Amino acid sequence: MTYFSPFYSRGLPGMGAGATRQIVDGGTYIEQKKAQIDQLFLEDNSWKVQTWIGQINSSALISGATNRWLYQVKKKQLTTTPQTYNTNTIDHLDLSTYIDPSKTTPCYNLYEYKHTSSGTLGDGTPVSQIPNGFQVVPVVGVVIVYQSIQESGEILYVFDRQNGMSGQCE
Image (cartoon, rainbow, N blue to C red; front, side):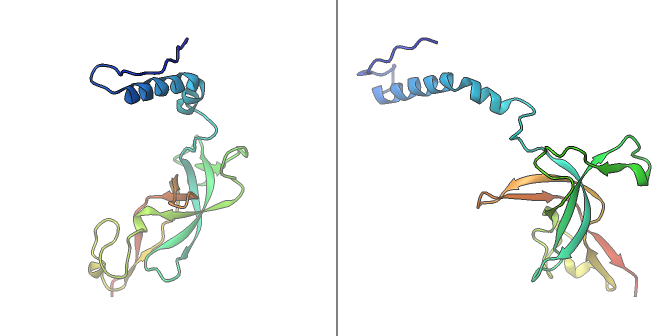
């Protein structure tokens, strides 16, 4: 694109000279950065963090919280035998990704974010209506993990799964 850079003393119809200059400068910037802008929106860029499949290895009650756990999740890969419990996941083999599949990653359950000892659970169930002898338990199994950016700019890994209930009738 060729571009002539005059000083504007008059703007486009209904617009001042300063606004016209900003429009021209914006268009010029986009044209100059077109390759980088296009690259940002193309699929499979290495900076782009995708969701991933993870298996919960453990959970620990968050100190001072009620019905909230910090989960340790390990990246997994789904197999061609989803119907078979023992072989439906394997350790993820790609070591070049942003999550090291050989280690567990701390994750939080979004469903638990507003859990309290009174009030409601994430699905709206009043805690007071949980029958005696039953309690909320941490999530187990395979989950889809998402990346979230905290207000501090740090990466936080989360998933969203309802908790189970455990206990027996009294």
